[in-house]
Amino acid sequence: MHKLNLTRRDFLKTTGASLFLAGVPIPGYTKDKPPGTISVILLEGGMDGLTAVPPFGDPDLLKMRKIISPKNYLKLNSFFGLHPSFRVLAGLFANNQASVVHATSIPYVKRSHFEGQNMMEGGGLSPFSENSGWLGRALDLANTPGRALSLDMPLVLRGHNENDNFYPASIRNSSKLNTKLIEAISMAHAKESADVYSKISNKSKVDVSNIPRDPASLAKYAGKVMSQDEGPLASVIRIPEFDTHARQGADTGKHADLLGIIDDVIAGYREGLGSAWDRSIILTMTEFGRTVAVNGTTGTEHGYGTAGILAGGTIQKSRIITQWPGLSKNDQFERRDLMATIDYWSVCAACIEKALGLDHELIAKKVFLRPNLPRVFDYIFS
Image (tube, rainbow, N blue to C red; front, side, top):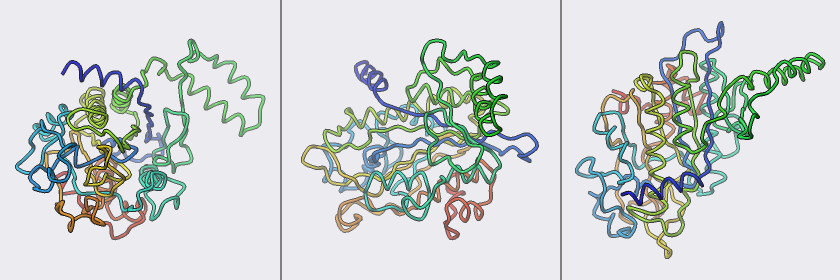
């Protein structure tokens, strides 16, 4: 166990991650503060839902992927388990504060990272069809702008014209800018340029210079600022490198380390949010799953169906939410992938409804552009 912890710590140092915050209530503009907070963990590369939440009750699981199925899984019920990396998540399950949606996916089946990730963030009817993101559009409806603690504003949060980005440098004294000098410069410029300098001045007053950039620390920081009375309502953390084509591993290995990072991020949110945990919902997203069969290099290829992880104090009863399709060849999507039987946009819509207090019909039509999107709210939050 000690060796695994050291491996994860080293892995955290080399895994790039970004934090994006959004949804700051505007005095005189936001009528009522939404009831909760929503945090999205983007798992780029395609998380293997069959390894993360193995359906050990399915007789075809070990027939097709024994070499990459965890042996020391944490039992959830008579059919499903959790990967052993999910120690914190298992505790939340025991306390009725976490759930899993299995055999699910966003409605994208072409297996391209570029298209899938754009679809995952944009939430449109097809890849590259939207210049705003689904969470950004939801925050628009709640009258709350966003900010990215990064060099870029991710597509998922784009929407409100007040959205802005902020990436504090780690260079010594770089956070101690001369705000009076900035204000003087802004007065000598036209209005548009002056507005830019005004934003720079406001950013220089935010003290985040000592935040470590690993995913767990970013989650802890996000939780702290979201717990404040006038803090942001939404956050997004991006974790890359889930594209495990070779040496995927089972109980240990690269994929296991990545699952451990998800667990650390959830723990970071839990610690940072404090009492605000009770009004939070956290969900994972990935552009697609992995193939059921193992390839020749003990990895997996791009697939379709996967699993979504939910955690937070707004969950009152832990569940495995699924319409399990089976893993036999005839049950697989295109005879190679886990079939997705639940549209993950329905899950995202339910989380928006809970956190931002918006009506499902409005979310379906204005956020996901799908008026007939099924409502699964009661399966998650009842």
